[in-house]
Length: 107
Length: 107
Image 1 (spheres, rainbow over the protein chains, first blue to last red):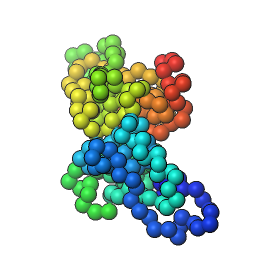
Image 2 (image 1 turned 90 degrees about the vertical axis):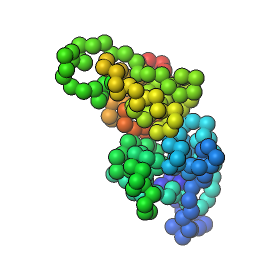
Image 3 (image 1 turned 180 degrees about the vertical axis):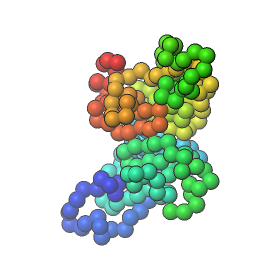
Image 4 (image 1 turned 60 degrees about the horizontal axis):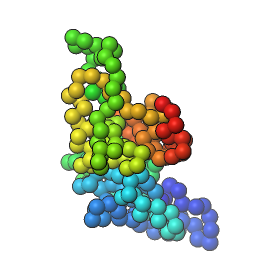
């Protein structure tokens, strides 16, 4: 599940589970799911509610929490998703702080 | 130019010009440009910083102002761009008020 939307409680809290990277998606799997309808990658850009994002709906049914990799950006805990773009599980925004040179320099 | 980003002033104010629809884009031109890096269509979803949006950069050089068609949504003057998605010239956000049934029912 996407860490911001995982169901609370259950036999084992998601707080005890290891956080993994979200499902790969997009052309040649070069993107990662950011939310149920958002797939982004450094080389591919972001897809929002397109056929490339259908796979990202499956993440909801996986019990362990996932989080996309990338540098923090924006005001809502977003991460740099592709050049000049900051995404959360719910939105993508133009963000000059996510330019290509700095985007993957650190986590 | 995108109406929210048109250059101010000049020989003829953009306020005097007729607002047209923004450039078509995306697969089989079934989308419309929402901003320089955003292309969305009812049937195709939204593309954000992908090869499908390259064409949307040209809009900046057109003198007359453009605005995407669609129902108003969100808090920042966005418009419903595809099912469940509200976009401005700078961002796209998941928005249940933009579901498929109502999205193109009115302007």
